Amino acid sequence: MLSLTASELERYARHIVLRDVGGPGQQKLKAARVLVIGAGGLGAPVLQYLAAAGVGTIGIVDDDVVSLSNLQRQIIHDTEKLGEPKVASAAEAIARLNPNVRVVPHPTRINGQNAMALINDYHIVVDGSDNFATRYLVSDACFYAGRPLVTAAVGQFDGSVTLLKPFVQDDDGNYINPTYRCLFPKRPEAGSIPTCTEAGVLGALTGLVGTLQALEVIKEIVGFGEGLIGRMLLADTLSMHFETIKYKRSKKNPLNGDSPKTWAEMLETEHG
Image (cartoon, rainbow, N blue to C red):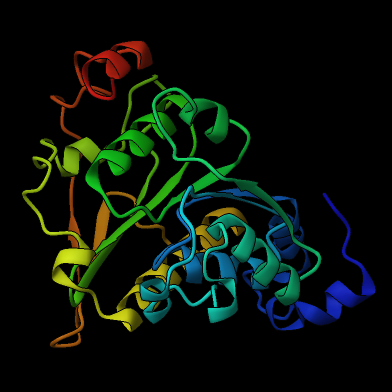
């Protein structure tokens, strides 16, 4: 367990007085390594709140640069960073927010060839991507790597968040938790759902949903509360209505179902 310095004790004082966090919980945060996929609308608040919370190492995967249209929602970046790689802009912002956090920039797009190498180096993964191909890839890779995944998505005015730990087994070696493919068995066809570029997205919505992701990550690291395993939190900000739906493991899913595939098979059939 990593010890906390005097300045860290003061910085995280409001965490430390929480019975469910305390000093041991803050030490867990300091020792944690979290990989964030995407430094955009969802990734921005995730990165800011994880850094503020004292997560010791944060990896950022993004191959894009900051553009003016990003700034309506991607609040970790600012006007002076236009044209700069998002991983560099985010790293600079985190350094200003909390110099105790180590940032590892990965200026690349996650794909079938590099996913396992990236994910294996971290304890937990957060998916802030904006497309289904990446969501399915990341969720599949996290299963084979045995890493918890907090994944989310946003529409124009609505969003969703869930926690995936489908690699967990009971005492008899049986898988008990659902996968992303149990929730969404069939990947939508490319172009069937408008992107935020095409349909638009409310900027503050991404802040809300990304913050919920960060909260789930902190709970998972420290070990308090009830995580969103087998549950998806839905937020409709037009009516300000929140609800939780439950979903179960499907024996038909190709990861931990009755006819499981290997990572190599998934790469060949799904992520080639």
